[in-house]
Image (tube, rainbow, N blue to C red; front, side, top):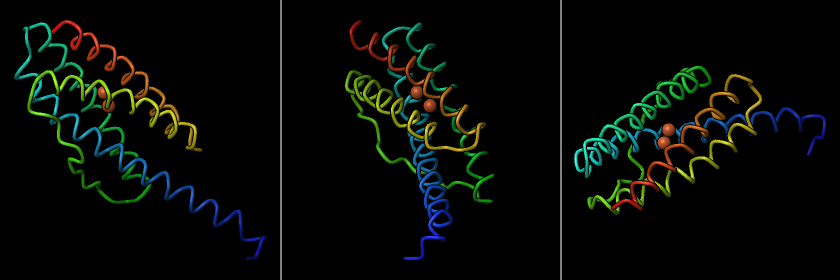
Length: 145
Ligand SMILES: [Fe+2]
Ligand SMILES: [Fe+2]
């Protein structure tokens, strides 16, 4: 091990960690966009449907912001995939969404902490706040069924 090279290797490793995390975040947003489109179709009331579609719009915005960051860092387009399909049953779908939103808050705050770039930090911090708000809505829908 050549110690003088450590900072360099460290930097590269952290950066590829960040890129992996952002790719994972993009897949998560992509999955949520698909899932919430299905949930909105099965919504119990018009009001609920409208709220789910508003949440879905937030995810579209996150998806666009994260994809732009990814392209900036890698010079490549992301290739999003649905990593976790949402349950078919409406109530199960709401529970799944609630849990997923909560986990995403932690994940995005981690990314925000790890990132060096102030723009990336800020975007993930803001997205985490949105996901927190989404989690509250899904919890509310779960309890009002
Ligand atoms: Fe999101
Ligand atoms: Fe969300």
